Image 1: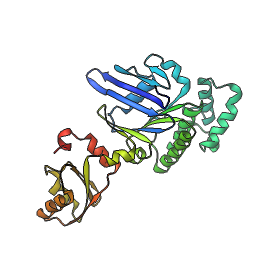
Image 2: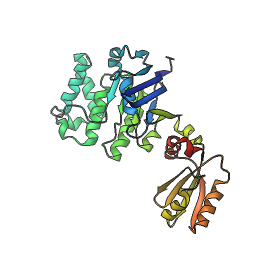
Image 3: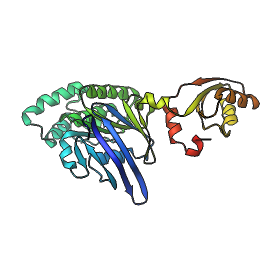
Image 4: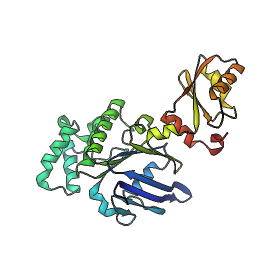
Length: 313
C-alpha cells in the first residue's frame, strides 16, 4: 500500500450463496480524508465496511488497511480503527460515563488515562450534562454523539462509519459532520456510508455503489462535471403534464420532479437539448420555462445507476 492511502482494495467481492453483495471492488482511500460510500440500501456499503474491518471474510480479492493485509491479519487492526454502526449498539442500561469507561477497558487504554480522556470526550461531544444519564433514555442525537465518542476514545487512525446519521434530525446531522471534519483535520481517515446526497457532497472523495458494483469514484466536483448528460431544468405550471410529455421520449434518459421543477437528463451526444425539450413541451401544449443547468450529485447518482441502454439512448 502506498504511503498516501489508508485503504487499498483490489477485486474485493463478497457473495452470500447466489447473492452478489459486493463484486470486484477496487478502492483507494487517501489518508486524512473523508471518503464516502453513496448508494441505496442493498448496494453493498455495509458489507464492504465489514470486510475492511475484518468482520467478514471476502469471497475473492484482498485489501490493505493501514498497511495490514485483509483477510489474514484483521486482529492486528482492532486497536487502530474505530467502528460505528447504523444502529445504536452501546449499553442502554449503563450511564454515559460507564459506556465510555467500558470502551476504555476494551481497548486497553491505560487506567491512569481513563479519567482525563473521558472528561475530554464528554466536553468535546457536549455530553457533560448527560454524564450520569442512562444511555437508553437519551435522544437520537445524544446517542449518536456518545457512539462517536466511544468510537474515537482510543485515538484510531481510521474511523469506519456505517450510515451513522440515519436516525437523527438535520441539526444533529450538521453537528455530527462538524465533528467529522475536525477529526479529519487532525489526521484521522474516515470512511462513511450514506444515502443522503447532501452528506455525500461533504466528502473529499466518494464512490457510488449500485447492486454491489462501484459505478463512479472521484471528488463530488469531478463527478458532477463528468455525468455524460445535459441537464435541462423545466419549470411548468403543470409539472405532471410536462413530465408525461417527456418521460417516454427515446432521447430522454431520466425525468425527476422536484416540486414544480423537473430535472431532465439528456445524453450528451444529443445536441441542442434545451431546444429539444422546448419543442416536445410545445408539441404537447405544455407551457414551461427551460434552461440548461449544472449537474447536482443527485443527477450524477441517477446517471451512473441507470442501465447502459438508458444512458446511450
